[in-house]
Image (cartoon, rainbow, N blue to C red; front, side, top):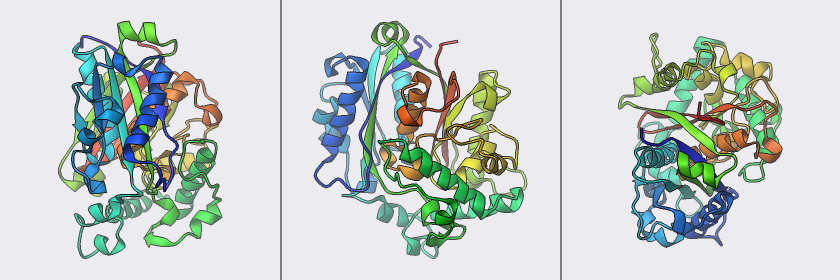
Length: 387
């Protein structure tokens, strides 16, 4: 590649369930303004703008064009990403390509969603199984419930471990002023929540949120001038398959798209002990079983060991290997920015700027992931240094 790429500015809005007095453009403007201020730049310094949003989930069409005066995209080249849950990571990756190629030196990447005006549930529900999923009006819940049961059967994980995951997420989100669901729940609270589809109850599923996240990316030569604490986008892997078995891998010979992504990323970067060589993982975790199950699938830990790490408290903010110290998707899920938020939060951890939810480990390298349809996995490696 012609250029190495760094994150030099980060901005996000507060996330919530309803903000009827703020429109999409104002959300975007808020996040973009904060990112530019963090980088010490203005919109005139941006050479390109990448936007990410699931507009069809909100009943919109090409809303990046309608909102380009708010985003700063007017008169600038760029792309609109629309890839489901991975839209945020793909937007960041698109920005990376445009700078790494040498085409641009500074790029703005934005992800957003406003689900209080156009909820995603009806849109997702109408493309799922009409005999099962549609009656629950929660779209992906059928597949996520199925893989949760399969994980419990093969690993020994129990409902209580998923409840521990959700309780841990609530404690992390409570310390994050930008998170949506900041209420603290105990394991007992989670276990008592209304069942949606076994084994997932209401608290074990991600919420419907709204918010926006923006980042400024820059080439190596520019980054060193712009930023005292650049975070380097060291590598990324995207794995996309079109049949369910390759994502969820319920059979005896499991090889999921997460596994493929983890294997490629770690091999390319000579990482043999991920829990030692990376210090935090901002995972796209849309349901409570995701963290233990996908730590295994990403090859971060051994098979059937993920829930044991939960049990001994290793994945908490102050633990041996913190996962989603921001509260994760379990507490904040504005789909267009859910995955870019994972990258931004991982970068804040590397900078030491995460505030009350800063992990206690010294973070030198961090992982961030995106997950979504159809059967798409993104895994990114961020670093405090270029080496």
